[in-house]
Length: 345
Image (cartoon, rainbow, N blue to C red):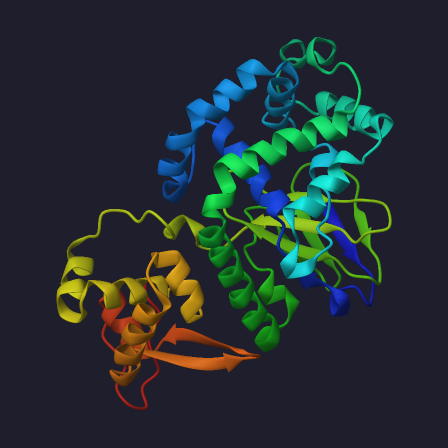
């Protein structure tokens, strides 16, 4: 079991961040592995053949991606902590990747090979890990993945990531960090008063210093959770954003969903379902692919009907379902005045 042991000041200075590089890394994993999240399946099917052609034409890219998909240790030059907070830019991240010295990358690649769960012969470094400028060559591959497969989809993905941060920031304000970090992954958990369980595998604990650490969501649950580290920078824990499997391409609605759409209209029903997680009107518009004015009109009707409510968080208004909205969406009975709502079985 690997723990992140927190300095006494670490949590007070920890924060959330976004990373287009982590999102690109998740895209590489999604395009490589046989399974994908339901909401990413159409995207994966649309791009996988083209990505395969890129790998077939470049032995270095094919070898690197193959090792990424088969190792418990991700090389450090592809898991750099973001430095721009919620406004991190892919250009800055790729520039840092390109600048990592070959000597450092070579050591990391050998560690990744040793941590592979596949036979070493399948990832023989001598066959593809040749030449020089490995950081720049890796950055070129990730630039292609970003430009060709992720950039166009980034507004929708970013909206899902910001919703996760909004959700967890609300938990942080109300209940503290243990609740905000709850269920970030299958293996992470709060341990005692000053440690986070990062992995159930054997390994060395890490000490998080007084500068705190970053928590970075990304939109695919299949890639798991990984830790980013770089000299002189805080650790960054990359984790699957909550509920992204419900965004984007939704499953065929059932009888209850069809009845809800007939009752309140398809657009307002979509907003009620999306408010499984609180969101701003901009986040809803980006996720549902409609205009901000359309979302605003639907929210006004839903608010007047006491199905949603909004609360100001800083300069943003975050909407959530009311108890009546919850009952209507989930098909439960709303509580009578003065009665406590019952937990679902």
